Image 1 (cartoon, rainbow, N blue to C red):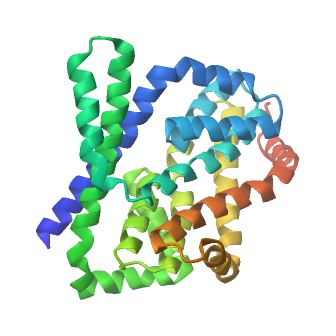
Image 2: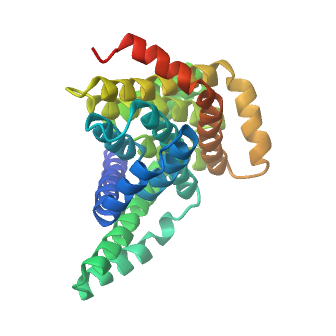
Length: 310
């Protein structure tokens, strides 16, 4: 059992290291361009949503995009209204990583590791070095997932672990577990990734995977709220909007859990369960944005009244 836990921890550390390193490396490589896109294409809510989606897909971290947005709001480069659109878009962009994780690319990670290492080793060009780093970190990320996937295999025969996983069948309990795990490891992508892996290995049902995914959406708000500490009123409102949007989406998701699960099954058809969990993540986040985008003016009005500038 100790060996299994250590292997899972090793895989998780590799995954988290790769996510953070990827985000930092890509920000360094296209950081100024990303900032220009955010500042230029946020004239209205819908263009802000598209910008948030694209930048999050590029940086592979909704938290990084929302934190950058909070910094911009704090610096008065963006308004609170523009920031709300970016936050909604970031929630869509983060679902791309779960689709990639469900593709079973872990077994090809050594190829990415080799290509990335060779580019770093043979080239002195900064541009090629950055490309090498990005490929290498993607390899580390997928190898981390591959390590966790192999580590959980023996847990199929562990009664205590199976009993604990059975608790995720209850939507509220599963969501609390997902939120707690995300709060500890500070990465909703890692939590959803683990749910996909456990589902693939037959350790987690579709209902359990979706419950954990819902909780991960709430847990991811913690680091963006931390970014608002000592920030302006506009920045604080951005963090509160992210929390409120995610919380209300989860409440609706839990209230309509069975119909939502049936919708995911219908859309996924005969797809493997890991693909269905990834689809649930994408459908939930896109549906949440499509519902709440019409209430952005109301959110703005309420939060402006609760936290006036003076």
